Image 1 (cartoon, rainbow, N blue to C red):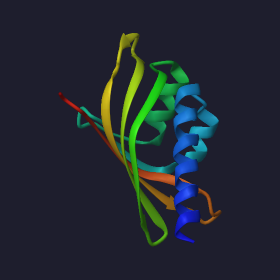
Image 2 (cartoon, rainbow, N blue to C red):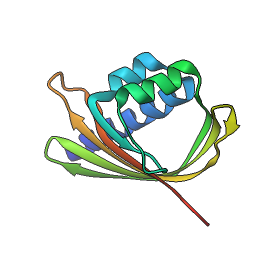
Image 3 (tube, one colour):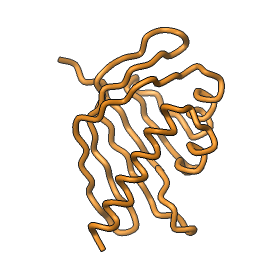
Length: 126
């Protein structure tokens, strides 16, 4: 059971990365919970609609994601993912490349799909 759940979370993480790369707003809408709270590396708290709009408008464009580390911790009806990744892309037309650490909380919803309910990112400073 735990291995199966961990594999589901890893598959959801992969789907999230691909949706971010493609700016696939429909897929992001499915993967992000309506109640999402995302604290970005600048300390700003954003919601699901903020994230979708950034992709929809072209404000945020991610061209490559290189994941160096990923760890899953299973909880009752939820899972936490800790990841380190290098992101390449632009924000408002300016380069927005960097190494980030992410924490995401995935929750199994009533329809049995996994959705991100909370996330946090930090810029890794060398």
